[in-house]
Image (tube, rainbow, N blue to C red; front, side, top):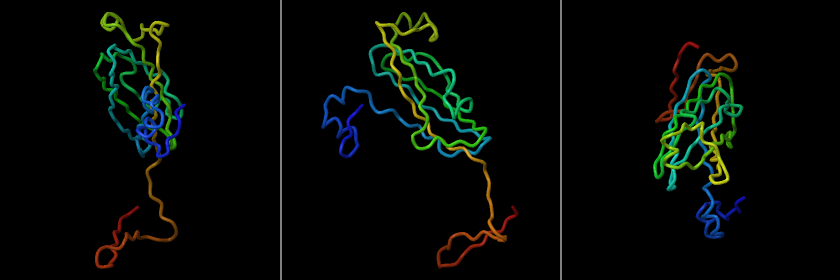
Amino acid sequence: QRPAAANGTRAAQVREDPAIAAKPPVPDLLQLGEVVVGSEVHCTFHLRNGSSDALCFQFPNAIPEPFGEQLLLEPGKGFVEAQAHHPISLTFRPQNQLNTGTAGVTIPCRLVPVTAEELHKNEPADIVPSTQRPARDLMLHVSATADQQGVQLVGDSKEICFAPTVMFRTKVHRFAL
C-alpha cells in the first residue's frame, strides 16, 4: 500500500518516497454519470502498452454486481502490441435503478506478457500465465448512477416558477404534465 502524501498528489508521494515511482499508477475511475433506466451510454478508452513486450488482456466473463449484464466491454479479450494501444468500447444499458457511489465498481483486467510468435499464432484464450510470465491485474473502476426519468409536482401547484431573470422578473412556463 502506498503512503499518503501531505497534499495527496502522486508527484508529492514520489518526492517523499522515490520507491513509489517504480509502482504502477493509481487505477483510473471511469465515471459514466447519470443515466436514465432503459437508455444507454457509450464510451471508448484505450489500453496503452508502454513495455517492449506484447500483452494479452482479458476482462472477466461476468461483470461484477451491481452492473452485471447491464455493462458490456468489447472486446473482452485480445492483444496489445508493444508500444501500442488498443481501444475498448464500454456500453452501459441500465435496466433498473443503480448507484455505485463515488468509488465505483472494480473490474479487473488480466494482463499477461506474450512473445511475438504467440501474438500471431494464438488466440487470447490460449494464453495462460506461468512463472516465466506472471499475470498482472489492471484495475478499472467504473462509477454510474441509473434512475427513472420523471418530474413530480408537490402540492396543488399547477405551475413551475423558474429562477428570476434579468431585471428581477420571473418567467412562468406552462406545460401539461
